[in-house]
Every structure is written in C-alpha cells, then in structure tokens.
Amino acid sequence: MTVAYASGKVILFGEHAVVYGRPAIAVPVTQVRAQAMVEGAARGRGIAIVAQDLGQTYLLGQAPPDNPLRQIVVLTLQRLGVGLAHDLTITVSSTIPIARGLGSGAAISTAIVRALSKYFDKELSPRAISDLVYEVEKIHHGTPSGIDNTVIAFERPVYFVKSQTCEALRVKRPFIIIIADTGVQSPTKVAVAEVRRAWEREPSRYDRLFDQIGEVAIRARRAIEEGTIEEMGHLMNENHRLLRLIGVSSPELEELVRAAREAGALGAKLSGAGRGGNMIALVTEETKGAVVKALREAGAKDLIVTEVK
Ligand code: PMV
Image (cartoon, rainbow, N blue to C red; front, side, top):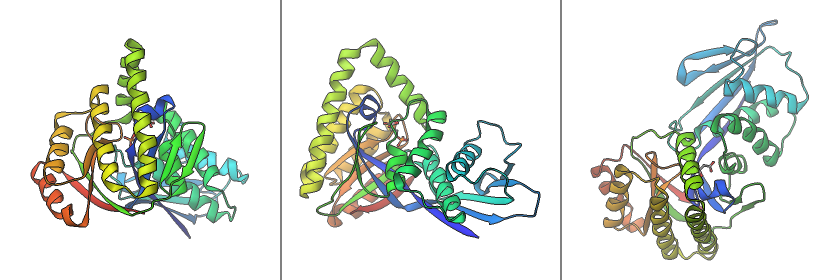
C-alpha cells in the first residue's frame, strides 16, 4: 500500500491578472491536505477509484470520460509508461474545503500522481507533476493560469508568470496569514469567465488594472524577500482595492476585510476567484487573536491560521 499527500494553497497577490500574463504569488497551506492511497486489488478487477468524501466508487473503464479523477489516473499511468492494465484501488480523501480557493482539485490530482509514481517506483519531478495536473485543470477550469498546480506540486512559495516563470520565493522573515471563509461558494470558472467578458467590453481599462496588479505583485515579491512585512500589508490592501475595481469582491468579502483591518491586521484582501470564497489577513503574533475574534464576529465560517516560511 502506498500513500501520498498534497497540501492546499492560497494566492497572496495577483489573482485574475495572472490569467492575463501578469505575475502572481501563491503559498502552500499545509494545515489542510489531500491524500491518495494506492493498493493492489483482486486479479481481473481493474482500476477502481474511491472518492471517500463523496461516498463514490468509479471503475476506470466505466467512469465518465470527463471525470477528473479518471483523467488524472489515465494521464499519470500513460506518463509513467506502465499502461492501464492493472488491478488497483486508488482511494482519495481531503480536508481541503471545496470551491473555496484553496486548490482542492489540484491537490487531489497531485496526491494521486504522487501516489501512483511512488507505487510504480518511477520518480516524477515537481515540474512533471505540475504539468500533468495542469492538463486536468485545463479541462475543468476553462483558462486556468496554472498557478494552483505549480504551487501545490512544488510545495514552496512561488512567484509565477503563466507559461514563463515559476520561481521559488525566499521568505526572509516568516509571516502569519489568516485565511477566512465567507461561506459563499464561488466557482472559479464562473468568476474567471465574467472577468473575461468585462475585459472584452473594456479592454484598455482592464489591461490597466491588470498592469497595476502586476506591479503590486512585483513589489510584494521584493517585500517578501526583504522581510518588510508592513509593506506587504500595504500591498495587500492595494491589491484588494484593484480587485474590487475589477468587480470580483462581494459584500461578505468587504465585511471580513473591514473587520480584519479594524482589528489590527497589517493588510487584508480577497484571495482567489472572489465573489465569495476566501479572504486573507496579514497579522503578527500580537494581533492574531484579535483579528481571529473580529473575523468570527463578522461572520467568517472557517478560519485557518498559517505561517508562511
Ligand atoms: O479561487 P482560486 O484560488 O482557484 O483562484 C483562482 C485564481 C484566478 O487567478 C482567478 C484564476 C487562475 O486560473 O489563476
């Protein structure tokens, strides 16, 4: 039996603009993770995928072709060069909330790729894992930037430019982020499609906003590498202002961002697709408790406190 894991992720800077080629920064969130377990099955049974959280089992041969679990298994076995004729049970489960910008889909795919490569004793580089996961992300998310699969496969804070750069970030001074959930589900695909329509209507306005977000991400990279945490907070606030202009905030997000700042956060912004989902707040050891309390009182459904290092 072989087990592998993949952690969640959160975007710190640059969401949406990253789809249009501007830089973004994302970090792993190790408090939540997906797990995949591979074990041999009775002869002739073929490959079964058990989605434990959904209480469902799919036989590879019978699963709908667009099932993402089926797709990642098929792509991985092809990439490993071992063919599809095996008797295996692949069981997946996850503690990463779904459709909340924490990368649950990419993490489940990554855990499956890692578990299969371990089971067949064929090593894959983080780049190869990321590329496989991206294939499935593309099918299900329309035009993903690729930042989710990259940060999750590399398991490091990354500075990312679509189809160009993926650099591991050196974090000079560890910092604390609170991730708070509005409780409003917001499919990434829908938000990304709406931003695309708005960009098509007003290309020059949106391109300017994307440029400004890109500038913020470049400055944020410097702040992270130099350990200037207060500057990071300012940049989070600026990034949030620009995301609001793009049209992806929501009353619930605004309320949590306001509550976090009033309670002493150094900066706060929505994170990921927006319209719901998560926001993040940058705090210190001293302000952590007050911000957690304020976010709860302001209606946050779920809170994760994570140190980025
Ligand atoms: O909601 P999330 O964390 O999956 O983030 C989506 C990030 C976008 O920039 C909006 C889309 C993308 O593909 O990068």
